[in-house]
Amino acid sequence: MENESWSEIKVSTSAPYLNDTLLPMASYCEGYYGVPGLHPSLPNYLWLEAGTNFGILADDDPAQDHQNTTNHLVTLLNNAGVSWKTYQEDISGACIPLTGTNLYVPRHNPFVYFDDVTDTNNPNGAYGFAHIRPYSEFAMDLASNTVARYNFITPNLCDDMHNACYPVNDPILQGDNWLAREVPMILNSQAYANGGALFIAWDECDSADTRIGMIVLSPLARGHGYSNTIYYTHSSTLRTMQEIFNVTPLLGDATNATDLSDLFIATNLPPAGLRISDVTMLGGACQLRLTGVNTNAAVILLASRDLKDWWAVSTNAPTQTTCTMMVTNTTGGPWTGAFYRIRQDGG
Image (cartoon, rainbow, N blue to C red; front, top):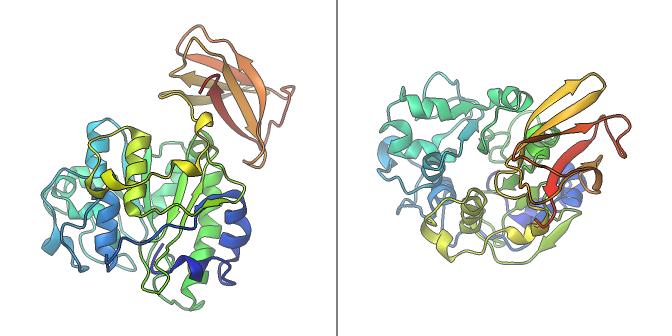
């Protein structure tokens, strides 16, 4: 999201979905600040990707400001075998979008500024073409559970609270309406239920209150409207992503930042590698295939109808690192319409 301070968003009558629905179920920050002196948009997006703005203080296209460095997040992810993709609203998907089109602007898409992603401003570069995709493809990827592990989503200039657009002519309400349409799709997905996390962030603001929004939704988050006043910046978000995916070295100012771990319940984090890899319907039951299992600890299947209250519905003592668990109508808890997650004793 774009260009609004936290005080302009929180309790705003133009943001009923954010304030009345998301915040009561989320963890969020009361002390997340814009990087001091960092304006306009592009330097902030670069900072989220690399922990620095490379001295850039303008919104020029990649033709002027492309960077020949591999020291940025998605390259670390790719080198570590962690899949990534960015979904940009209003691009065609026919090429790498190096210039503005419709209500898309490159300055809100940091990945097009790195030569190793774009093959140095080549609109037909295969790697960038595969990883920079139209937002219209996101719903299909989410429904088929083929989304990458790290996904960066940018709405267009009307939906990200940047412009006042007809017929609403209220940037905050436009963005709130977009979130109300799109966030439920994510929260109802298998990717989210399987230990996923959704970070809703703003890039900057120009008001006297330099705090900006950071809202986190996750089955692994404290949630229930938890907030703190810890000092955070975009460096904190970058550091958090590096820690989640275990990629090093820490980039730029991420080395100096406090991560966002306070927003999560650390004891609910699954062991590295533990995941639901497949879901199969077998008659009246649902079979979950688990991989990355620790054979020295019980696997516990938890269920919830509201992503707030969770209870154990099944326990399995695994003998192999891959196993299955069944969810049936007789399982002690919700079945259809429920969210499920897994954990192991001791972590």
